[in-house]
Image 1 (cartoon, chains in turn red, blue):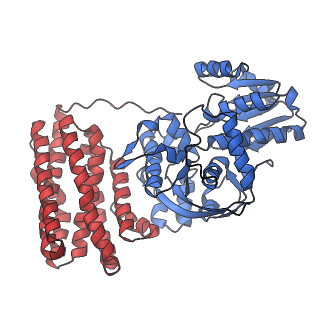
Image 2 (image 1 turned 90 degrees about the horizontal axis):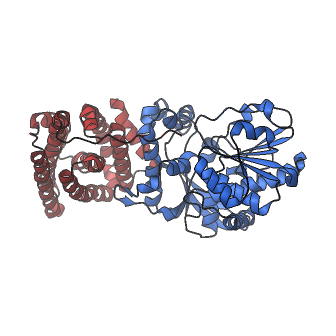
Image 3 (image 1 turned 30 degrees about the vertical axis):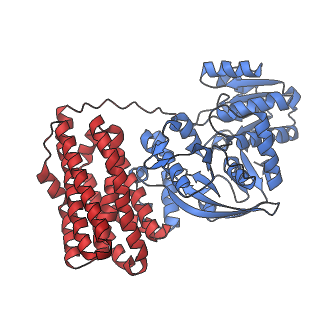
Amino acid sequence: MPQLEASAAIDFRSESYQDAYSRINAIVIEGEQEAHENYTKLADFLPDSRDQLHSLAKMESRHKKGFEACGRNLSVTPDMEFASQFFSQLHRNFQDAASQGNIVTCLLIQSLIIECFAIAAYNIYIPVADDFARKITEGVVKDEYSHLNFGEEWLKAHFEESKTELEAANRQNLPIVWQMLNQVEDDAHVLGMEKEALVEDFMIQYGEALSNIGFTNRDVMRLSAMGLAAV
Amino acid sequence: MFGLIGHLTSLEHAQSVANELGYPEYANQGLDFWCSAPPQIVDDITVTSITGQKIYGKYVESCFLPEMLANRRIKAATRKIINAMAHAQKHGIDITALGGFSSIIFENFNLQQIQQVRNIKLEFERFTTGNTHTAYIICRQLEQLAPTLGIELSKATVAVCGATGDIGSAVCRWLNERTDVAEILLIARNQERLHDLQAELGRGKIMDLTDALPQADIIVWVASMPKGVEIDPATLKQPCLLIDGGYPKNLATKVQRPGVHILNGGIVEHSLDIDWKIMKIVNMDVPGRQLFACFAESMLLEFEKWYTNFSWGRNRITVEKMDQIGHASIKHGFRPLLDS
């Protein structure tokens, strides 16, 4: 039976780590900023949930500040231009859906895809993070579960009328997540995060969300497979 | 509710199953895909005991493949097992058996250290390796089949390959306490563990594989390795009973010699009514009325409502626990496989 090799210790101050961190940290900050904007936007569409959505938006702002502190702690300047480019396609799709009043698509992008992506990435990051970032991230990930839950609950309550739009939105946006993962594979590896673990955790979280909403196991496997189209 | 964590036997097998189940997108994916595939519940199972009692279960496909070990994708292999366990627990399964390589990986890589999986704290008491039932069945196979081949237990030398493992050590204890076998040969790699076992039994000869096999009337093979091992059939006794209780079971194809009788070990036959679709597809090693004893253990624990990790840790299986699970095994309609 082969043995598990011990992982090499991570040098958080090394040039290669800080270089990779400048992009990963920026992605996280940008992601939280966009999440803040997206929830604020969703609050306009869903007056019944307005207060809750504003409170989610506020949490995302707080997360952003936490991650900015993580960058400062390692004396890293986040590459915000890279991050905005990184999110541009998902960002555009959210904006387009919002402009057409497609709430289901907006929720799928923000509350399912982005939250599942965040939960997966944060969970994989926590064991390899520096002490400062670990504490911040542990706090954040707990909040993200509640954000995911908001989307799940809403879509579950409107499952029948949302089903077709969810499938189309999934087909449009899941391959983008795969491309995004490919784009940061090398940087994530420097931080001690393996792409296959990220994909697996994302698939677990996303599959669970789809099944909580009301999709059958078979639907979930079919919908998840659409990410593969990007590879 | 009981659960079974299973996996497919090779990448090729996985691809054909994906096709058969109607997922062509997955059917042409390579090992990389399976390394990042999440666990899935692929079947709901209803089992009716010969007592008439009915229980329900779920089959969790872990997406582990033996190629992950062979290609040193160890992290992926361990992730599959842990994630499948978290999946089973999340779905409220009371007792789940770790089938095939699952329990071997769990033990070998000390996965009990990883109790926190994302937002789930694994409750290990919900899982069983199924090793107690497997060891019991192997012992019963040995006791029942050897005399029919002209091997008298009181004169027989039994070689246990993988003697210090969980199943191997349990088999040694049973042979020592419940049978009158003449000699037990202890074979394993770790000398310290071998000496500990010998001290515990108060008997047994520590030998290496090549010296031991030619002396054995009965060989109990419970070592597990992804690539298997070479045995020279010409050196084996005639008659010789070889019980293949390892995983995967591949000795029958490797050892062919007149007088050498090879039996798949740790397999039960049953007359229970088991309604499942997935087994026809995934359980390639064993035909319809047969079942891995480790899987059967989780069914027995569910029938008896023994919601505890009945088989857990290394070298903790006592003959009393083997008796206990054996009694339940007979009660509900399982029998040791005796035909090869």
